[in-house]
Image (cartoon, rainbow, N blue to C red; front, top):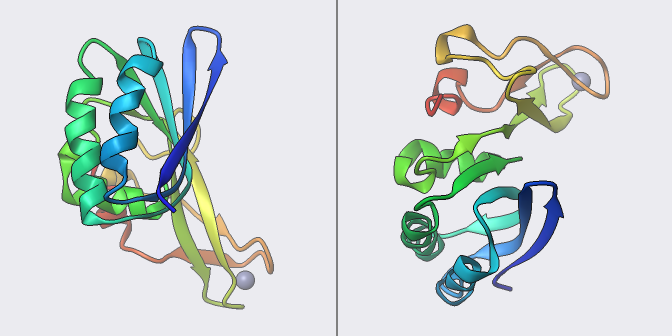
Length: 156
Ligand SMILES: [Zn+2]
């Protein structure tokens, strides 16, 4: 399944929620968004299940044109999306990062969970600040980020 999207409106902002796999088919879908969306766009990545190198290329080509005279906010970026942003800064362009998911595993009970960091709430302001303690949702013991915090937050 290729990528698809859903557009909803909240005040001055339109929210684009992306679904599915961002792959070679994205070359066809992304350009349709240029006409479909206005000046202020929130892109939500929570339902993106995978992204491959063709998809990354399609997104970067699209974003370069899409971000001209638009405000773009990235929301609920998955760990996959964050690793793309850390490898390829053009993946983000000039977009504001509003919230990101990091994956955590509990060292005590093995429970895996995604933890959401939101700008202005619990997101660190810089790499050096650190993520703070994230308790396991199952046993309450401190959970550990699967990646090194300084690598995960390298885009900050
Ligand atoms: Zn636990």
